[in-house]
Length: 153
Image (tube, rainbow, N blue to C red):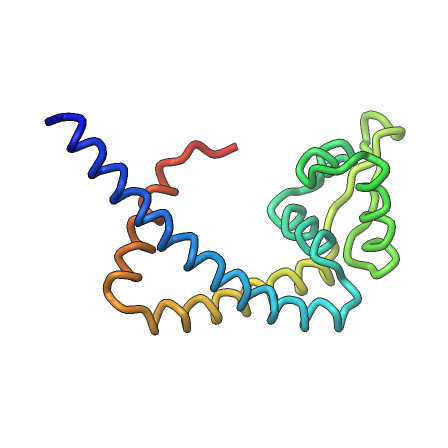
């Protein structure tokens, strides 16, 4: 009896996961299309934008921090930072305790771009959420609750 219950629970979980996957794919496509149009105006790529999003939640990041968060080599991270610095979205600063240590922080211009894009994404998501049926809404709510239990960091 326990095995049948586990099998049914697994099937229900898989069905929930399948519905969530559909939701993620749909919302991702919609958000990415809108994000793409806005970012292209500022000559910013998706990896550059994601880096600025990381930086907007931190005081600064070192090049090795950036490489780790982005899943890139330090050289590739340096290239991302170089381009964003030329566009005045980020700046490099030297650590007070060791001038050889370079830290990267987002500028006000970068903060404004990230904030504007987050607002656009929130508007898109609110529109999608308002048009959901009850089953879709329940799936999103269950996922939100599950994600709140995940460890951070």
